[in-house]
Image (cartoon, rainbow, N blue to C red; front, side, top):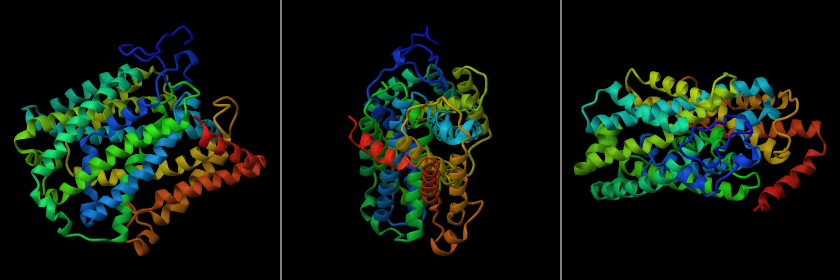
Length: 458
C-alpha cells in the first residue's frame, strides 16, 4: 500500500478498504461533510418519511414538530460518529475492536451489511417506480439500469462519491426548491391541512419522532466511512457541524413537505410515485427525473458502505468486488416487485435501529471518553462492549413496538410508541462506562480531560 498514490484522484478506483488510511493519503476539507450528507438525503425517500406522522393520525402541526425533534436528535448523533473519522482513519465498526473484540465486530459488520443492503433495496424500488412513470421500460430493465449506474459510482469509491455528492447537492437542492414551490402552488388544500382529520396522541407523536430519529441514526455506523480520509487533526467540531447541518436541514425540509402533502396522498390511496406524478401535473417528467437522479447518491453510499462491511466480516476480496456483490444482492432482493411498499418501509425503519442504538451508546462512550489513540492495535476481548450491548437490548425489550413484537410498557403505557432506541442507547452507554470505570479507576479523570478536549478543539 505504501506505493499507492490515490490522494485526490477522482477517476481512479479507490485502492483502500477498511485498513487505516496512510498519512500521505489524507486530504479534503471538513465542509465536504455538508454536501455529502445533504446530497444523501435530498431524495424522495426523505420526502416519503414525512408522510408517516400524518399516517399515524397526527395533525399537521404535531407531525411537523415530531419531524423537527427527531431529526435534531438523530443528526446530532450522526455528527458525533462522522467526527471520529479523521482521528481513526478507518470505518467505525472495524475501529471498535477495543470495545467489542474481533468476534463482536464481525457480528456488527454483518448487521451493518444488512442495514445498507436494506436501504439500497428500498431506494431502488422508488427510483424504478419513477423511471417507469416516464418510460416504457419494464420493472427488471429499469431496475438493472439504475443499479448499474449506481454501482459505477460506488466502484470508483471515496473521491468520486464526494465529488458526485458535491455537484448533486447543488443540482438537487435547486430542483427540490422548484418542486417545493410547485407542490405548494398546486395544493390550495394546504391552507386547510391543519384542520384535516388528526390531532395529538402522545404515543403516535413519539413514534413519529422516533421514525425521523431512526432515519438519521441509520447512517451512524457509516458516518466515519466518508470522513476517514480527512487529515488526522481536522477539527471534530467542524466535522460535527458540517454533518449535522447537512443532514438535518435537508431532512427537516423534505419531511415537512411530505407531511404537508400526506393527507392528500392518503385520500388518493395510491403508491407514492403515482401521487407525486399527479401532484406535479405538467412538471411530472422533470420531477421524475429529479427523483431518479436524487436516489443515486444515497444508493452509491449504501453499496459502498455495505462493501466495507463485507470486508470487515472477513471476506478476502478487493473493496470494489465487495461493492459489486453487495449491489447484486440488493437488486436480487427487489427483483420480484414492490408490493406493500409503505408497510415494509415503516417496519424497516423501526426494526433497523434495534442494534444501532446500543452499539452507538458503547461507541460514543468508548471513543469520546477513552480517546481514539491506540486503534486498532492490542488485544481486546470485547467483553465490556458486548455485555453493555446485550444488556441495553434486553432492557429495551419492554419498550419495543413492531410487527413482530410489542412490549408490555409500549402497549400499556405508551400507546404503541417505540422508545426502545433511547432506552438501549442510554443503558448500553451507562453500562459500558461503569464497566470501564471499574476496570480503570483513572477513567473518570480522563473523561473530564477528553470532554474538554473535544469541546474546545478547533
